[in-house]
Length: 336
Ligand code: DAH
Image 1: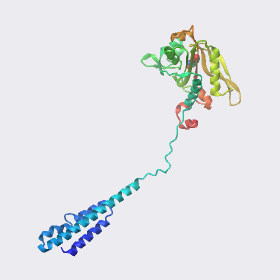
Image 2: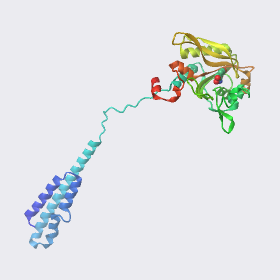
Image 3: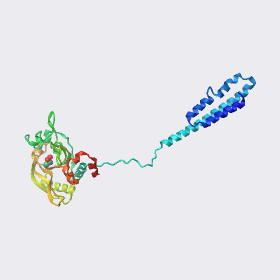
């Protein structure tokens, strides 16, 4: 091969390098123009067969050509790598200025809202929150609360008993929390116990086998019905409006003596005033204090218990209790 040929080989190689549009193309160019079967390699391999006086000159020129092509390959590689990186960055950019996907904020369930309001009112009076198990012993739920063995509430037709555990039941009221707390502390005791309770009721607009109650208990020296009445009046006025009146009507509960129904004045949609029964209450029966290890000669107490679901229905003007348990977002979103 002569020198003009070598110059042409080099020019073609450099042109091919410059024209390679991707790293993959450039690799083919490298193989074609510097590989073992390339024209350059052929020239270099043939040097030994040239007349001696040509060898130096052709060898030098061929080597220069090879180096020029290799340098061009290297430079082109760097350029293409940078281009491809740039393109990848371009492709993958996230535009942080785009508005994000909105995260809808949830809201508290209406029963939770009512419970928290009730808690706030009573915490401000000095009550603390106590908790107890939903699967209770018959003793805590009934016996210690002065409810005798033959009492109808103790029958399996009213109460869910745990299969295989005749002594265990789903608590029918939050009152057993009174018992648990009195067993472990001495007066003064001021506690509230919100929670879920269970009874064998068929479901309808005003009944559910699972519902919510809040219990209250005060035990101290010298507590009377006047304290109970004052606490109830304050509680319902704070919760339902300062114009409310309350009426205590004689009633019976096994664990209080005397016992009352707490009725709260209510003006219905037609402007007629009436009374709503919203809580049970009374002076803690001395038998209950004694069953829990509290000296009933020295201490007296009052207790109250009310249903949250009923109050939430009034509070939010909801006509059907079942709505609270169905978890239909169309209903729940109205309380956000
Ligand atoms: N536990 C009663 C019920 O579920 C409500 C109740 C009435 C609670 C009188 C009390 C009370 O603490 O003194 O019907």
